[in-house]
Amino acid sequence: MLYQQQRTEVGEKALALLTTGLIVGTSGNVSIRVGEHVAITPSGRDYRTLTPADIAVVNLKGEVIEGNSLPSSETPLHMAVYDSNPDVTAIVHAHSIYATAISTVLDQLPTIHYQMVELGGSVQVAPYRTFGTAELAEVTSKALQGRSAVIMKNHGSLTTGDSLDKALSRCITLEWCSKVYLRAMSVGSPNILSDKEMELAKNQMESFEQRRDAFRST
Ligand SMILES: [Zn+2]
Image (cartoon, rainbow, N blue to C red; front, side, top):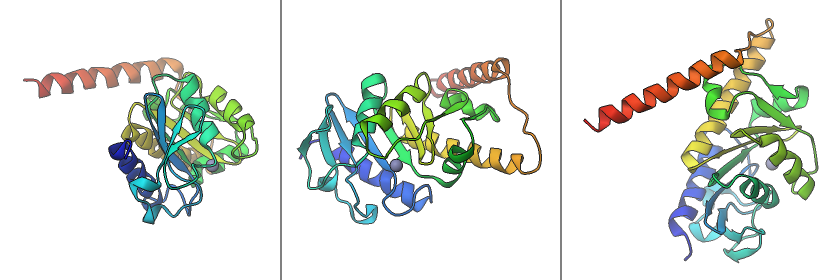
């Protein structure tokens, strides 16, 4: 079987989306890129019963190479993101409650918390297009540019990373920030962190990363 390890991980993370409440039913999808191929969750399958053989392997045009199931309806979206972001090797797309709620009323999630450094700063809301279309893939990958998260109008969220762990952790961060922002807006006008403050937070994160690395290597 091609990419058994990656297909196992795709299945495990899709199940994690379900069990952590980030998605309900079969909404949302997950993929890992390996060179010229992508392992992606199947369309309309219960994530609690998936085996690695059920995870589709497609080429970068979205054509099936191996797998028992039809690939996700959002395969064109995943392909467009990989195509325009060569460093990205994993994608999580979810219909999580709070990011989806934000998507129906706002054009962006502003920088309300320093943790948004890991998302690339404020998160843009891409225009609405029908699910599964090339048009949705185009507007969403465009709104993602320069960041690792995007919100899709009246639809959900998409996060990227150089590992599926990172893409999933960003999905959780985006959902948490969306929740905080909506709660804050219900009682007042939330303070927004400036570009300067976000830059300082980014530098601080990098500094702690270096200190952790140095600590580990001693
Ligand atoms: Zn979707």
